[in-house]
Structures are given as structure tokens and as C-alpha cells.
Amino acid sequence: FSHYSRRPEVLAAWQAGYHEIGIYLLENYDKYDRFYITPNHGQPYIFSLFYLKYPPSKYQKMARLSKLDEYGFGQVKEFDKFLFEYRHPDINESAVVIGYPGEFKTDIDASRIKKVRVNGEEIFWIYEGARNK
Image 1 (spheres, rainbow, N blue to C red):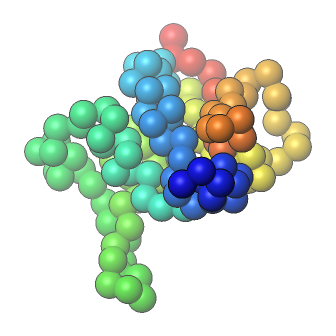
Image 2: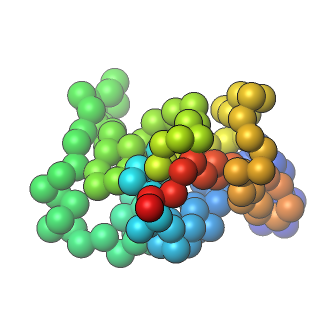
């Protein structure tokens, strides 16, 4: 409990940082048209639903699942303003891209990045595009 959870590679595998992202989503939901969230290291949709306190009846009408994988599970691809895929940021789009630092290319505007840290380690980057008018 003391040492293992402090290793950077373990933090991502344990899905650290989703609480901080949930708070960000709550505070910024109305400011952007779309949120792209990387699906690496788990199912980010469930954290989004939980932290947004999203109504189950509303979610169930719009959720889209992928085909079943080799383990018999479908993956949630999107709901509402949330699309669970990594997408290279576009400064002109009213969108936020949330991903792991290694997913972002070097040609992005670093001033638009907010960093999510857990135990001092960068877990996620949040890239903010153009805001809604």
C-alpha cells in the first residue's frame, strides 16, 4: 500500500486521476461542445457518469456500445458531449481533449494544457480548444 501505489506506471493502471477529471468536467461542461477522452487504461465513461451524477434513464437512451470484444464485453464509445477516443486537439474546435501525456504530439500549444497530477506524477493532460460563445 505504501510503495506500489507511488510508482507512476501503476497510477495509470489503477485509473488514478479520474476524480480530478470528474471535477473538471463538472466545472466546464457548459463551456465546450465536445469532450474527447482517451479510452486507454479502462472505461472512462463510467467515471464520467459517476462524477457528473448523470441520470441513468437519460444515459441509457443515448449510449452506444461497440461490438463485443474477445472477452464478451462491449465498450461505450460515446454519450452526450463525450466521445471516448483520443483525438489530436484542434484550437478552433469548441472541444476538450483529455489524454495521457505520451498521446499528445509536440506541435500543440502548451499554454492550453492543464495537467492532472496524482502523488506528484502527471497522469492526464487536458487540452482546451475554443470555448463556446
